[in-house]
Length: 426
Image 1 (cartoon, one colour):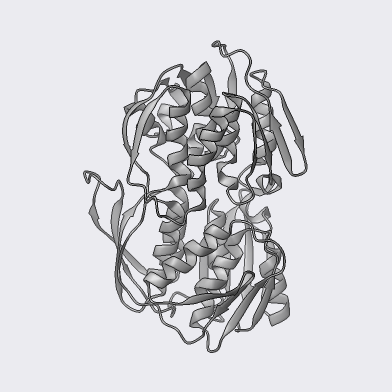
Image 2 (tube, rainbow, N blue to C red):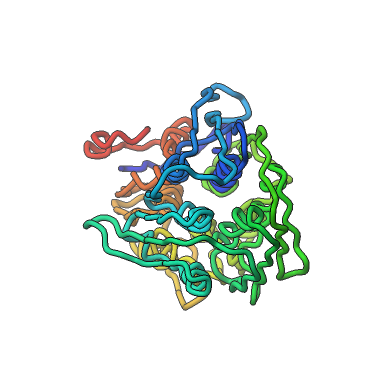
């Protein structure tokens, strides 16, 4: 796709939060009864979670389409929860490329002692799962990686999770903690989760706790590093609306840092989403060279790097977790920046970015590396300097209508024949 230099103007309703959608759908499925969940966006990751729930015997129906609503942009679903009693046997769960889905559903599958087979992309099932592997080893639960076909690997596990005291490193993905939090309240006695070192992405844990509370389940922080989970709890069905997504809104508001005038509606300024910190970081980057720790907001990394490059540069610490995303995000962003003459310096847990010196247009082709956040970040960059980007279909993972949205804002681009053939929304 060719992106032409252009200025974004207009009003944009925020995409629904993918993180909150996962959590609401899972809590609704674990409830015993019918729940209504508004403002769901059918990204590939959310489709993966819905597919896994349906594979477990949860019935989900599209109730209405709210595309014309003024405050939301998604669809309403009715979820017929099973109270955690899953009927489909054995369980076959396809997670595609969704790390959240895989890490959330491993404990969920262990609510029963039925064998569960997880499949997904090679990239997904190569991502670290040692936290669960260690738990399964201690509890005698079978946990085995097996080779699948050319495109997909498999993970097989069988055994029922038992309550207890779980010690987990705090500096790994919060998705492991969330996965356990979904399940532990349903077990027969109390549990604790102790995070053994400094916590990264704590906001995502608090988002999980907040969502569970809205479904009648209570989780408590005993202290800074210990979560207490009462057993014998029940999820209560209800009606919830998925709030707007700060992670994806950041790509549209980044256009304002380079001359755009975009108003993003539908964001909850009292949200627990950690990625709302972009509002602060964008202002810092516009004022001058600044150092930013992204340990708690790694998904913002690519777009923060772009804003830094288009202004005064910046130093980013806490970048090591970027290696285990859909791509090695720190490395690939540095590779693509080099094509534009943007100097970078990368070490194990730090990336320094110098400002782009020459903002004139040039015939450059950037690669999306099969990573939705890389594609969207580089697209923002190209709205300033122009150029081509390959692999744009990766946006289907989290925001399939990304290009529809930026076109409505006045961004000028030209899809090639292959992209049109693939049917991506423009």
